[in-house]
Image 1: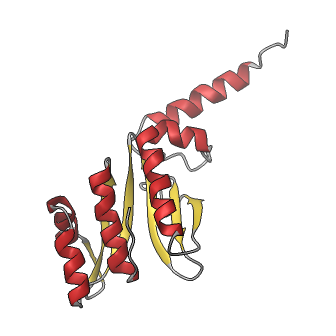
Image 2 (image 1 turned 90 degrees about the horizontal axis):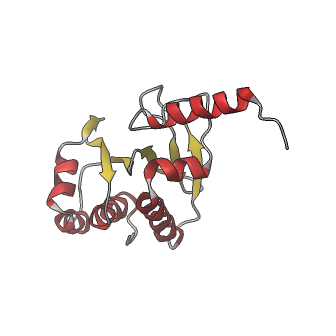
Length: 166
């Protein structure tokens, strides 16, 4: 029988504590494994990530990079981009995911049509965006269900001028 390494148990306990004490995965020193991410966000959110990824892959060749951007408050997440354009950040929260994307002012009838299809919650996110520049801003959308995924698809459709159906 193999002897247990007491440091291994201590490290695992510390790692588990760090990953589970906050809404987001905030320990920059510990790169989370996919299984830890899935445990943190839950099975439904892991499935939602797959749905987002599959919808985007119908329109783009996408890249999802595990990152710890913007200092210590945002935590671990995926930077999602095409070959040439950043699309959004997807942050891991306890029991859900948080999509952070930059939007600009609606300028066309097509964009207005997409905006009008947003849920009331989606419209509130749009109206309460964090301002950035003269005409744009950032949305931080907590996604917990399929209805909210539809909003994310509409936001991305407006941003990319492509049909993104999630």
